[in-house]
Image (tube, rainbow, N blue to C red; front, side, top):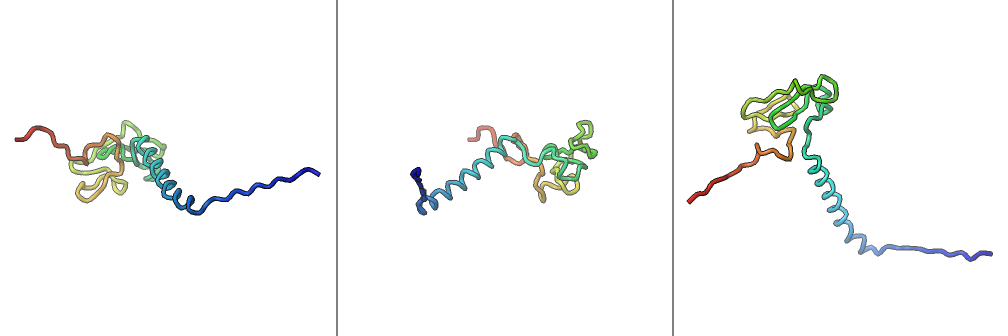
Length: 117
């Protein structure tokens, strides 16, 4: 009769507790990197408005005509001081957040340049 070998591996409970925060950090880091790699959030996604339109930048929107993508000839801009939003095309910047934020957006960042004495 052949010999039977049994191997039982157990994990120390303290090791499991120490790795949980590390695992969470790794998952959050991966999500952050993948979002940054895409370079945008909520941009040109016609499905967010049931195929009607999509925000293509912080202040521009385009019509999709239920085709799944924005028709480039049908891109419009919001008025000055307005963001593109998913509820009604445009909303005042003072009371809304843009639906599309690209990696190169600067509209929501204050930039100070120059030399002051």
